[in-house]
Image (cartoon, one colour):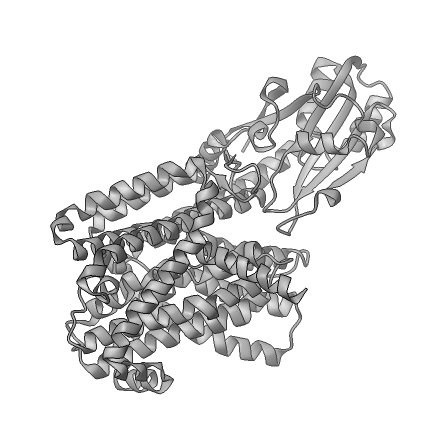
Length: 629
């Protein structure tokens, strides 16, 4: 039993290497170069400074990843799931309480900053790897930008097909990457064993004491070494805390430490801090294979970031933070493998513009990290609130957690303020745009939902009126499924069909789809049935899904046929009738005019409910309803 459990964790840990650790695992390609590139003019590249900055870097990784995420934040899972929206869902699971709106907004800001960061990660990762190829083959130096664009274009074009079987190679390839950079670092350490002094936290503290301002500024570049740390928590639901922890402590952390120490040893031996330091760790004969491996590793890291953006978008759609979007499932076996064309297109345009606009990984490093710090801080704040509000920890434990989390977040944010004027404004602007979109959609959708309810009226009143013969309804053979947003109110499509057409099928099923404050709901626990006395052939079915689940209404109805007599009709012949809101702006002061226009634009471009619920096109009817905003 123990052997099986260990083998299971080993397999999951290998998978985690290809999904969770791609971003942070490829940081050595540009992190240390950025640190000395930032401070090169003011801080001489001396042994003391090399050791001091190395020590700061290693201990920042230790505190943020090992202590903050693995030690603390990953303990706050939402039924095993992680991520910033999982924290928000945990807070919402306690019902409505004072301050919930503020902390939900913190979560929205964190999510928005993640999207801003998602555009930079593929750009800087692939660009830095291409620059490494230029080190191995100097004749390719002038082709670095075109090569980067070609690689990124291919990566984004392949998204529609999914990673499929090739995704199974991501873990082994990243394991090879970590072993390679560890070996290269170890080779250089053997030449300069004195670099191991950087492992002592005393060296970091002494350096910070001697150069407080420069240490703070250096943290602005050191943050590049922890980008992707939030992925450990975000992907916890896929691999589990034990597997991610095992992969980090057994493979990733030792490999990163050896690689960074090796880069420091290279500099202590007189090597340049310019160019791709990972490739320079190796003899000339090995530089080309390492550069090619680096390109593959950065493509895998970028793939993970893109997939993370898809996953987070789906969560946001299910939770009502964004309009319904067309979501394509690229695998019949893996529910989590999805493709969202709108997100893919926007990310691709952003990434290409960043590569062309900045031109090098060194320039991009100036823009990288600002959004990351915001996401890290949002995770910390929400975790602390969950710790107190949900887990009801004592104030002594709260004080200890605050002392561990908040000072580091403050230092990292302060260190990155200067980056805002060196390109950091771009991810912040992308995040701000995303935040406006989310908050506008939330507010506008709440107003529209209220208007729809006022038009349709209570479902109970509708059933009573129908039973009393007001109005007179002609019943037709067959069955119809009406999608509604609430079990208390009549679906607008049902209301319009009965009141305007004066006819209804003999079997009417009202289906309400809800999203729970949990990632997954087992299929056997999703359905809640109300026969509404079934006097008029009308019943109500509530389907509750998790925010990670695949929503398919026809499949759910087919699966439930044997469970409820009222559903024993030919579900493969039933007609699905839905109402689509046609929103027009008014002079009401319930929302700013520009936000009304934005909401209407988002509403018009949203995927139809038939796509979202996977309804059969040939048997689906949409009825327009005029809604005044």
